[in-house]
Image (cartoon, rainbow, N blue to C red):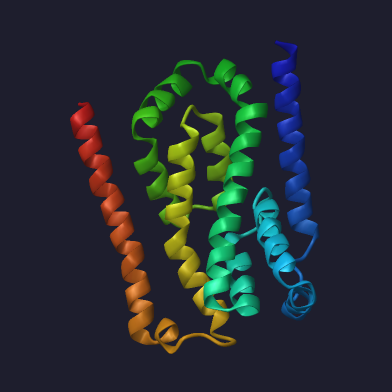
Length: 216
């Protein structure tokens, strides 16, 4: 019993610390990041991707990170870093919440959490995919998912797939300040990218409704 509340206290402390860091530490400027990546090469790209994941444990806007990546790395490199880093950040927050806070929330929420768990265990992928495609902030969803019984594989798949459309749009905007294929920033390209977001969201809605009807 005591260990449950100690872990919950640690989670609260982690969230408070992350919030303080996000409010007091500015993102590095483009010149600093670009110079660092140029000096470190492939290792720098790996560390930058990992840094995105760590930053997303705090309430740092994923949009700002993706824009910065687009300016520094160009479209394709930034897209990979944004998606991989975003997925790692989502997994980190999920793991912290599951390990540190799940037991305490189960004791506090009781039947209400049990009902949420029942729905998410069967249909977690569709629900999470909808949330990840939507403009709901990234960090709260990651921690909240860890507090539920949603399984790791559907969570990871929904996160990795759901952040692709938004990441593509964001890094395209950032990369337009540097070298970027013309089709990405052309009106037709932007419309196509926006269409991908709509199609993914529509597909998730259809899947979710069919899954619920079968369950019913």
